[in-house]
Length: 339
Image (cartoon, rainbow, N blue to C red; front, side):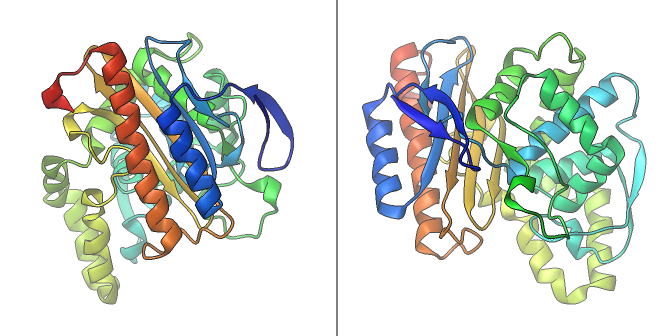
């Protein structure tokens, strides 16, 4: 048994050891070889006791994983009738990091559902900030508290322009991310509007990295307007825009070996020192939730050609495959052809 500490060095609860020797050995080897600090948790939705976990209660910088909770707050507001999914907003402010809108170069009018698509499919920071602006940080934290994610907090928007101290990072844990996916699969607590889950699922279905979804978006009116904006106002970035547009085909980590029609939801996050991924995958009539958070001060994960970037991506893909096989063997819920 081990006593964990969060990113600020504060003690947290004791985490039980992994049940899977293969996962335990794999995680330990990467922590030793690459100086990664790893949090991991996975379980079947129907199985509340049999859990694989590793430092799953340790607080980590959330980065783009915070977009899961932004989605939850947005879906609840729409389900409650406070907003219409087709309500249009003008995006004036563009920030760096991931996304497409930063290349447009001019204000663009988008519906809330379109902003949600940019946020989920392309992890667009500008779209996310527009949603946070209308929802407010407090409303996102209210949703976080409603679902019981007590070690998660939004403090700043994506890509903040001011310098913030370490304690000003948005933070979360593997436990809390898995809690979101369990709510998405089984239903959130009664304090959350009943319409929140189906709306979240609807947004995720449209944003899955399938060929059909990507081509549908590629030919859509909103994408054509973005493309025209880039061509007219930011022509030198046209190549970068198209490269980012096709990023959905390149980004699989935990779900590398999973058919897209079995993925209910997934969200990754990358920053200079973190490389995260999370997903909920269909296993027969159940769902397998997997969360892995990797942190390394020397990671330099913004650069795909670095040794640690390639190692982190390789680790996540191996973890996803092992976790899927572990639960497949125990539950008997997947045929050999599905593996």
